[in-house]
Length: 157
Image (cartoon, rainbow, N blue to C red; front, side, top):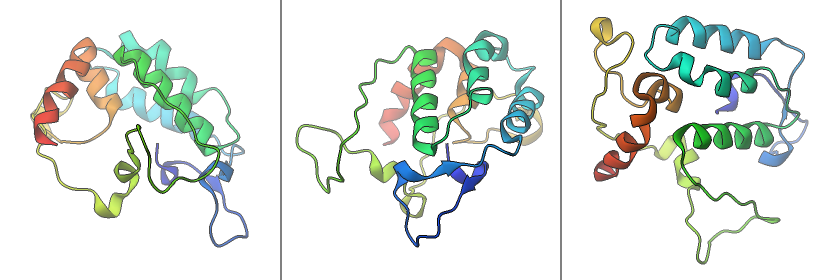
């Protein structure tokens, strides 16, 4: 999840470590986001199938952005039935040995355009296929086929 989609507490520092970024939970951002998801995806084929798994993300309070994002990753992996091993380092490591570095995926300035194969979306009859929306869009529209879809997209990477 990208922090610009919900409120964060900005420190007085110029730069802030990712692990230190706090979520501003005094606003009802979670309720607003959940209502938006319900409005957009209630009619999708798999919304009800994943609703009970996803909704806790919009009820549980997390103090730090990193903790919230890791919880999101955990729940999404469970929904996909993907066995993803995640670990955190104690200090910043510029390069890794025997690990895959995915940090480049978080850099929107260097994001390359990928032509994903289309799948049926809720409003594709009005807007056509909109690629790269979110993992929730894929889950709510493709359900248990989402992991197969993702594996098939590796040809585009």
